[in-house]
Amino acid sequence: MHARVTQFQVDSRDIDLDIAQGVFERLVVPEMRKQMGYEGSYLLRTQDGKGLLVALWESEDAAVSSEHNGFYAEQLGKLLPLLGRNPSERQSYDVTFADHPVPVA
Image 1: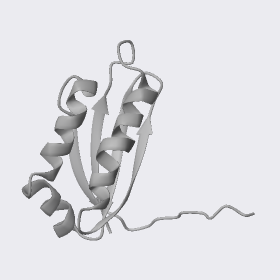
Image 2: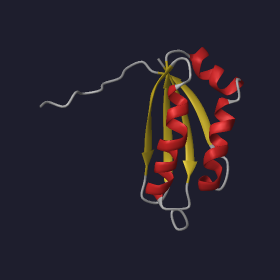
Image 3: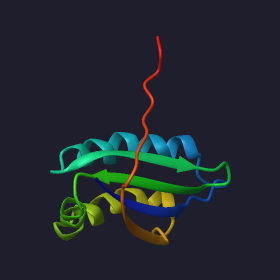
């Protein structure tokens, strides 16, 4: 598994963070799910608008392909009105351990 991590900042004085997240969930996530090799994602944020998007891919090739085919730029375009600027940093990581506990009923 491979992770693409994008760091961003939303101006929480001007943008409601819940609305911004809703836009991401409605417009971007369904498109991510259509991409070959997409394994899921996590959105982490603070109350002051800092955040990380961790997108999981089955391989580094799948993650790179999402950038080269224009998918990443297209999805970023949907979010730029909320972000106010391009995300500041993108990094790639090999996922060497993951623990996803299952809730006990």
